[in-house]
View 1 (cartoon, helix red, strand yellow):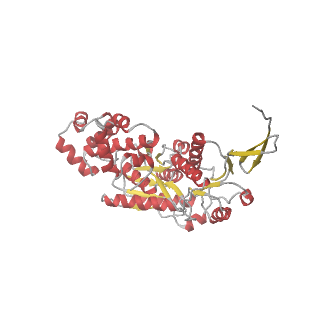
View 2: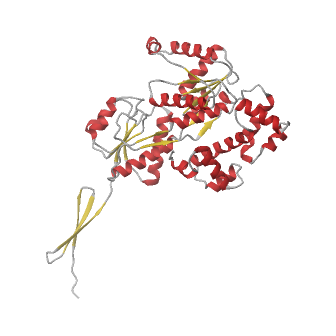
View 3: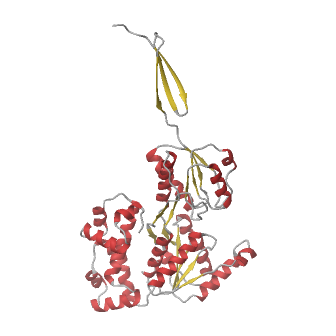
Length: 419
């Protein structure tokens, strides 16, 4: 048998590496295999607020599981102009908060696969991932209703789609249950007359003063919630006894700096960032996705002092609501509530219906299902494990109750799908 020596040479073309074998006879055999380089991805997401940073945390979590990208990120504020380097940048994809026409033009000019994570919706052909503002508003309304409020207000920022959507959905949800919501309407003149917010705070205080008390106020985002709390302080309005205040985003630093600490709806922002990264990866690998929208429900409410109240004059009902809030996930029933707050079952049922618009059993179920939603969103626990942790004797009962309450099954909720 004759042995041949051969020469091995390496060469590259594009992102592939080739091998050429040359035999003494002069014949050559060439093959190649792909060597993937990290995708170059621009993150046009501001770093100046907790919501946007949570989006970036979600992108990071996807990268930890699926491999690195070469990331380009500019330290910017909300609505800032696109970075100068983007004009001549040669990358593979973009995740962007497209908040103004300048960013929209820059993204469109790039021609690159892009996922939009803004509610502004300036480029309708792009896939769009966002938090579910209707679900956020419903969560806020139920949080305040469960505390017995019958007077409600909404304070947002009319410049932003998501704020208007939250206000509309909050009012519509309350109206379906027989309640009215009073909106704070900020005027452009007020905004233009001052740079330090004093005129706006004065208008906000006047609005709060005229609300029937006790009142539950839903602020469209946490900074707005802090402004509401400051206006209450200047008026001498007790929080949460006369006015309860609920924000959105659960920016823990801001919420804990507030006086009193601010309760806040917890949007599932990391999940949004994670799924945006997954979607962009598919697009950079050649999948065509245009105009697809996906919304993610909130994880629940981080309850702090600003809403830690039961706004009903009936002390026994107030005590029953607190008992349910603290013990619902231990598998209690109405009989356990009656042991803690002695009265006849009929009287308890009647007072709950009159003051809260629901039965004690429905109150227990609502608290348990809110906990189920948080565990579905925050953990990988099986449904049977979640049932055990939330006081459901059988996973089948949890499934039926969840579908009846939410309109979708638990697996669809976990996947971020909505009816």
